[in-house]
Length: 199
Image (cartoon, one colour):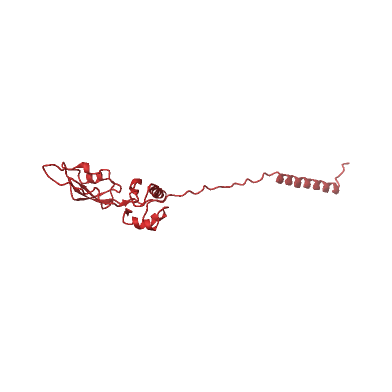
């Protein structure tokens, strides 16, 4: 006769099975890998240079021994005397080219005058009008070291500081901007007021 399992043994079996299931679940949870944390480092922002304005064309008055004398010509900013003469259709045969600085830098409102060749036949007096005109005015935003040193009170060291400031900070827009250059004070600004231009 086959013996039947007692209720007590059945209950014990269920408990054992339950303990095994719970233990397996706990073991499974404890063996899960730790989540990976991802850190995103954005790039360091870099300064974007400000756009610079495109200089406007300049007007120059050309007179003397050119093929189109007494002409106002419009040429690009930063042009030279030779560009103005070419815009006036070039020299005449009577032009004294030795008295014209073809490499001279032009500014708005300048006059370029080409003198005539002086000889015994035409008996002309020597013409002394500079090319380009403009007197002693120094264009502070394009002047070279040597040109800056012609200003009163400006020696080689101060001229270099002006160039360095201009390179780092851009063009000067008004007289007061020069006060930011070490070595320039109110007294010097008053001395320079009529001697410099900001074109």
